[in-house]
Image 1 (cartoon, rainbow, N blue to C red):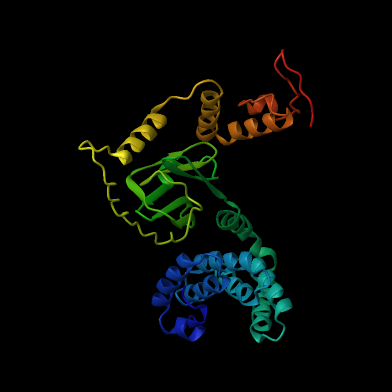
Image 2 (image 1 turned 180 degrees about the horizontal axis):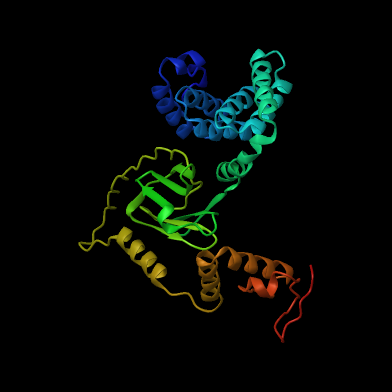
Length: 330
């Protein structure tokens, strides 16, 4: 992992473009270092990418809430974005954490002077500010997986299909949603494992945007982003056959593989088949279907399993055992 002490203000200021590239790589290696985001925010300030500054500084504060320097850089960006009230709040909070930093005093004075000179004229920025904060802070994304796919959901309602752009690469996915000429939501993820870009798909639904990516291998992902460990595959040495007087030798390894293949090809019956069906319904179901199944199964003590959220969402689910059985609470 890169050493965060390398990314000093002097190094960033020397070449902000290269600093952004280096910090992108550092973030990809470790997503939980607040200093990486804060220094990348500084590089974006020098490049005047103020929206990116707000995103990185906000992420740094998520990881390290009392990070005074992140408040300073966030406030500077908000000031240049004409978000003067938010800027004042950022500078005030930063000064509370680091009263000895004269930069806070200077910026607070600048903000006060602007707000006093314009009075409430800054209020016409409130809608734009609220909308911008919504796109950078309140829009959530989540993910889940099946044996063959990874699915990302972005919780944006009623998005225009023409304004949604998604680009796939082997180890990354980028999504953007344009709300207006000056307001855009963007998401870029560095994936833990590769995907087949040609087999990925996007659906713009009424309540969300669904990004479906095809796995290259049927393996379980421990997390969505990061760097996968370097696993080396070794070929086992071929065992020597035991000495035998028989001229007919039996390939025991092939026999074991054939038996396992037969077991895998067997179709489950009875309870096993039913459980497999419920697992498939849950994996392929919508968020409401999953909530309905979890709620009904838990509240009924395992005696009811419903997929209808409208039916079970607003009332407790009663215990309902089969007619020939009696339910007892342990």
